[in-house]
Image (cartoon, rainbow, N blue to C red; front, side):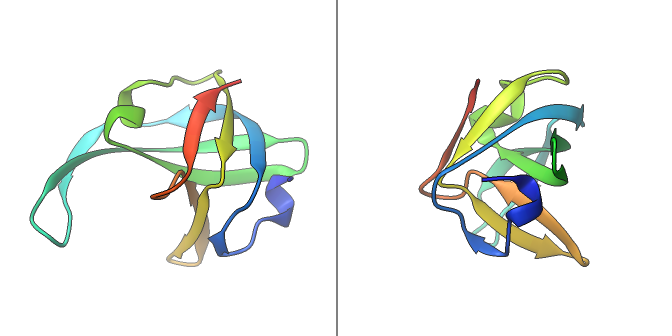
Length: 95
C-alpha cells in the first residue's frame, strides 16, 4: 500500500518507506498514568509523506535514512494531519 492511499483507521498489509525526519525520543504519560517513550518523525515513499509515531522500544531502534516496513499499522489524525504508527497489533521493522 502507498502512503497516498492511507486513510484514518486500521491498515491491513504493508507500508514501505524511508525515514526522512526523526526527533529524539521523549517521555510522555498515557491516559492511564503509565510513562511511555515516543519519537515523532516522517516517512516518505514515491507517492508522498506521512508523520509517524514510534513508541517505546521502537522509539530508539530507527534513524533518519532507514528503510522501514509497517505491517498492519494504524493511521490516526492529529490537528488535521495523518499519522502512522504500529498500533497495538502492528509492527515496524527495517526493510
